[in-house]
Image 1 (spheres, rainbow, N blue to C red):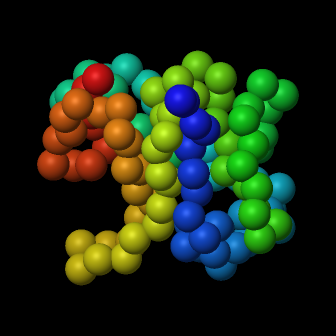
Image 2: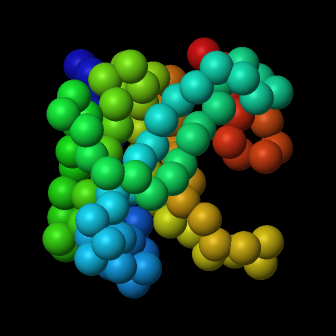
Length: 107
């Protein structure tokens, strides 16, 4: 069964920390062709559009366009803080392989 992506409480909390909703912005997660493995994630603050899937919690929103949605079924969108830096991450069970940069994958 295909499920929409899940967004962790930690990711929504980070959006609240940076005041995304206060600026009228949401976290946009998209999949585009390219990268070293065939597809790459594009993560940016953006306004929601009419055909977006909107995932909302803590007053914050994560939006995914209808073209990217099939690539992100059952994925988990999270925020991590590591020695190399803090960033939004995507754990995608649909990806058959990914590269070391963490933003490129193949299916």
